[in-house]
Image (cartoon, rainbow, N blue to C red; front, top):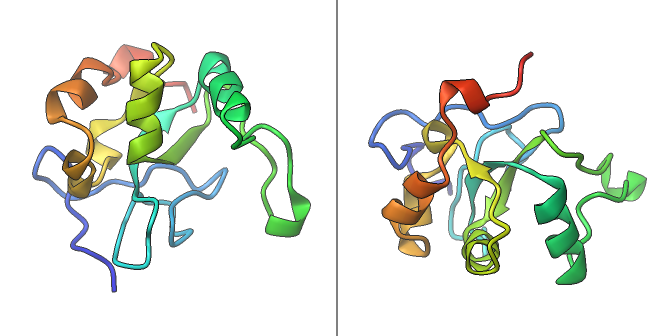
Length: 129
């Protein structure tokens, strides 16, 4: 059962990405619930640096995996990231940008709001299209 769709700003959770389709529930949003052990709650805009770190840490997000209907991520893609992985990336100085409106409120159970805000995108940072 999903938690209420509230973002870290206290408003309605906005979609993170439908292309590529993201979210634990593959609904385009960073919704979470008891079955989401990884807490896929942080909406990020991935960077080459982050993708390299993730691959190094054993989670290759850039290689397509057709058996999972996953085309692989490229810099600029938006993705619901596990909160703990975001925290780890921040500690390694490789954190991607965060879309606060699309980041689930439960992310702050693991990542301090101040850290999310420090990596937040502004309108000028958003990719076109």
